[in-house]
Length: 403
Image (cartoon, rainbow, N blue to C red):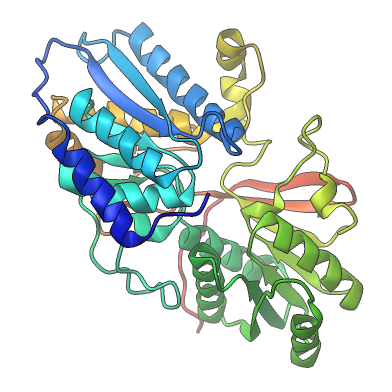
């Protein structure tokens, strides 16, 4: 389904807000209500349901420990499928009708972009699981992501944004690979892909490495970008589009430049459904010497830590996508405790100044200027034959300037 135009979405926002009664203040003895919307029944249902299970587990754990000041916690859920209008509807229902103190949002990029202005209008915090930096920094230019611009007051991230992840991966490459000339291949039609390419290039430049080519991935024939890579004499190529485009480009580059180090984004993690540690059909044949980043690796220590309680509740092993859901619920709970109230505006104020909050991936600290996590870890993974191997489950790197 195509996304509605900006004008149509604005109209949906205004109609949704106008149709709902003003939120009523919760009595401080009533349950603390947290909202969550995700794709629970469409093409992204597996990840959406994993995030939901993570949030459910965190809420259950908090309730077993007495809730928040004796107040039980309720998690209210809405299915948005893959629809931006449904995401707006879900958020509005939760914020305006259900009286939640905050809403955990879907990982689908369009949902974060369309709902974040609604969060500002309704003054109910959105904890987005998306990675598009423009969710919290709407004026950010994908072609030049360094000046982030003003931050949306009621929108927050719980995991690394697109630029944070790509920049961290670039610094990892600069530290670990003896490569002289890099290139980036990206999808010009995808702002997230552009953000990742520019952040990767900027971080490499700041690390004293050379980006010899920045090439657009076309639809179909890859002869033009392959020729550009040969002419630039690169020995490392970062491909950061969708799974389908990344896989096609990786296989073509491997054949044309067999010695090049292949580098990728989170879309490279496309395992077999029955064996998460095995490479799926998309990247079969890419071979070794291929590295990529992802937010949470399947070997993250947090998954082992949470496995017994997760299995007891859901009868299965936890997957990486449950981690952001658990952490997002934990941030809201920590903010309510800090605020001493479930008033959405007070919870927003508390979210902005959270520091050292226990999370599955380590302590969480919010960056007040960007509403993103400060110095978040990313997982560094590699493809070895037909297997995915975790090189570093939690790599943390801070920006540096080349001497």
